Image 1 (tube, rainbow, N blue to C red):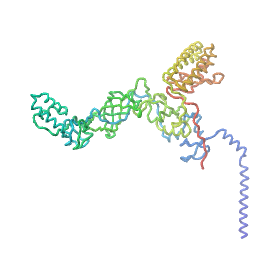
Image 2: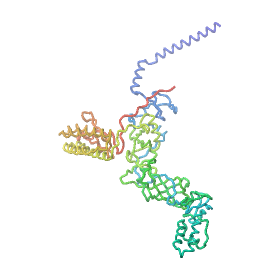
Image 3: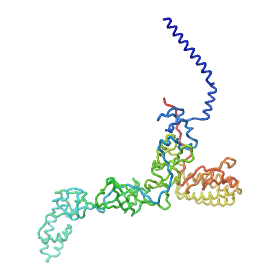
Image 4: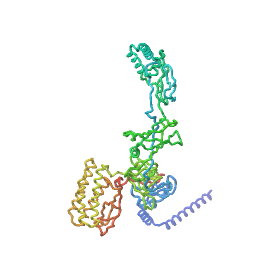
Length: 594
């Protein structure tokens, strides 16, 4: 027993010695804590607040390395895959792996043929002109029915029912009595015949009655036109009054195609256009119709107008209330944009239409969210009225994946819209401030040419254009904002008019430019494209902006001395809204949840 205890103590002593030696060796090999702290500081200085992300799921953003909580892949530093160029909250940068995973495809914005097709939906309706009601011409009791169910086909003149009418029997007796004394009392005879005419008996029936000398107690109800019985309102034994509706008949040899056309579709639809349509209940067959009527009133609930086309239906295949898909061949209006994008490139949120534009010349795939104004649909394409240019590359497949990733990353997205700076103003006002911008460009070009005289002459045109701007239709904040800008523009122009040298003119031109840029961003111009340019060396390297009508840099602050100094900071497209600076609050990077 004692030997075993001794052996255990000896073994324990050996373990303690080994642990002590290991600790000493580790202390000797280990770098000093000061060095570690310095290295960590350098690392933190180099990396900043490093964020780790997953190459397959860029929405994952953690403050330390580890595994992706979605797919389990090792996280990578976001800084190694994301550049500072994507700092704009309207842009979202993705890794090539994420682009491949989301199956993202892009295509160039192109023009479309002036002719296209408009896709609309609607229903088959009975032609109201082919509806007829068979009514009782005289009061009486229904004795027989020859039409026993709805849907029965009848022909013009076919018997539908027989009626026993005591009143008609009395009228016949009066005729027979008057006929025996017609030579003596012709007026009574004619009155008796007229009474039967009022009961809708024709001349042949009256002559037959008079010739036979016998009173008929039953009369047939005849079909006024051919068609299908859609409603039977009587049964045998029913009593009816004059004018009671006995049957409803409709002729379906021709039908109406009632199509819903939205406001944006109406300019492409006109009376006489041919419509090709298909019905869900008749697969594989295409029918033709011609537009005969366009409703002048828009339905307040559907925001659509009814377009009526007429189609032949001799074989009876088209049945009322069938749903149809119609195609109308269209032609672009004069002056309308011919740019078009695939419908798969669009995201909608209320009245907003969003596309993602691929930003060129970036190290990693970067996509800019852009709101655009779209026109009507032509086939599988939508016309673009504002917000895009020909040749720009847009996402046509995977657009929702980019939007979802941008939202999860804290960038702007379809559901997280930036505040819009551009205000809604009447088009007449927009044209007037565009005339003001044209005068401003002449002032700018005078400075570019180092021509003080031309600059001051253009200033007179600018002040005249400013005074001619009417703001009667501007309300509230829009009116107040314009009044403040108008005052500052007038002051800048006045100060420039008081200068004689190019140096003085350029000094105050900076103030004029700042206000013109604010006018452009707040109200928009009726110009396809203008540019916000910046010269970093102006005014002792303080820098200054100006508005330009050309992409080429022509520096108004230096003229010929440094004509090409500067860069384009922003491009303003006609109809494209400008957003307020700044972005949404970024999600704070979190640690692992254990």
